[in-house]
Length: 275
Length: 261
Image 1 (cartoon, rainbow over the protein chains, first blue to last red):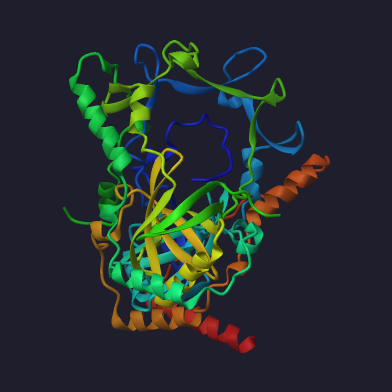
Image 2: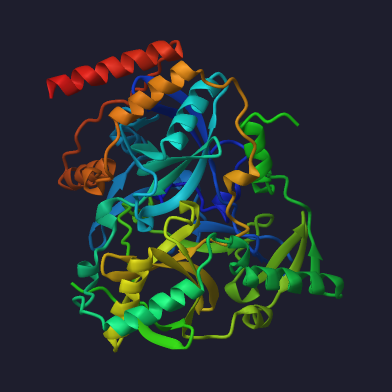
């Protein structure tokens, strides 16, 4: 996810982490508050490759000082904003934290809009919201009310050092937050410099309408979409695994953050399903 | 200022081909920081090290591996990876159409405007046809060594092509159980409906600004001039009470607000 740079060492795949919620906070509408946890609604790619040394040892990325060549620990580096060429203003974690608005843990739903009225170019990333213990009833009330009335709730809130504009949707009794781009991050056709619209010949429009009708489906079937590249890679991996000389074994990493987590299982548990 | 063309291709619909240029429809405005070496007062560099020995591994010695099970990697060479790349093509093939709003928001990744490259008659005819049919095209294409699927739909008088996430990355609500817990009562549902109806309106994106981003930039500007403002510590708050009670109070408060307005 796009966010302000943190001082910690860059992780190979931060998104992969996550039996713990990505964020916890409170969803409010009117004076009703619903404590919730937030989990990504998408898994990381299956085809991520690791960088390995000549002996197959998984490598780590480190910051180092160009002059001395020495590696730098996280307490030896600071975050700087370039105000002029080669002129930086150092900004600390604490300063950023204190700049966060006061209601930092609240997703305050102050507006509801027809669920299908938001153009797709706003959407960035999806997160499922699951009820915190004790908030199931208020959660179900909000989810059911929104789904029946075909509404999405709009809010802004701060999460992990970035302000987000979100639309909350309700589908099958489950609330989902879609983070959105702010309007000043969206270009208009005029910004891009697209040419002025010209009247199209009626016959050509008809031709396309006929084609659209002939190739129309009622439903979108995502199964057909291209995961081909990933599938091809996994097939090649399988083939190579059986051949000699392509496989290296090293001590498995004990670091739990790198463990592959089944996000669906985590979500099931968090939604409180009985096994 | 006109945006840069990032790619050129041709929309393929049946036997018709329409030459198009792609432009990014978005511009990330996240405040970006650089990591600095505090002592040397300089930008840092990054390299790969062997975490066991702490030794740097030069880039020509780095191999790529896929972890098939913990600690077991299958090595993939540059040659392997090149072979996996799809054959380059300029075709954006529109394979089928679905009603607009049929596709869940979860699929959309990066949006691009398509602009006409030479003949704009066919381009604008397609815009009109999609608008008239309230239809969204499903497109497949290869761009910069990667397969893409995406949705093609009209935005005002222009075509917008949004890439989709990969099918096995997206988790849909269908795959999840209904949340556990007691169902809300009819009375609560009626009150909650009344409450959201009072808060209902149209989507006005211009009402929303990234205030935090603005605050960070203003703070940096002040700090650059040598006078950083003192910042107050963050406060958080919580509350809880019986659900119907809170709903009634919310509705009453909103009614009062509306009367006052």
